[in-house]
Image 1 (cartoon, rainbow, N blue to C red):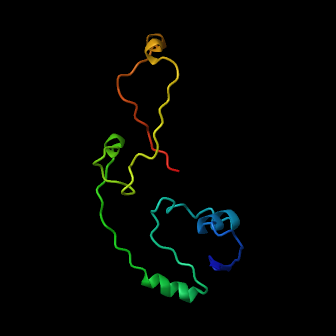
Image 2 (cartoon, rainbow, N blue to C red):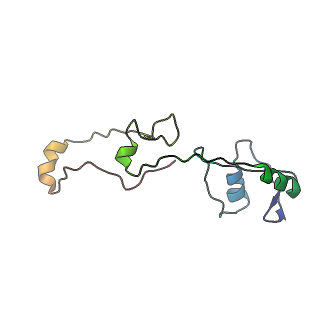
Length: 124
């Protein structure tokens, strides 16, 4: 394949992504992950640059505007627009029970009646 005008080749396992090949094998760390969770738009791999250019010209992308939700608590509601429909917007739920919060609260000096709100969501 030609990458940035340079001919390169590699033998990789079938499950190797193009991104992993570019970043890990060829050291092109400017390549970024964008389609790990179904967000990819298009990719072209071809035997020649001319075939690739012709293929790129044939790609048509029709975007559908979707509503946005910027509050994490609103995004967790059942009626919220789904990021990856029909799946829930809640990726993972964990219940952590350790100690006795009611017994420890008077001694800690700091207490909040507000719900915990994470600063940013983690994406795997």
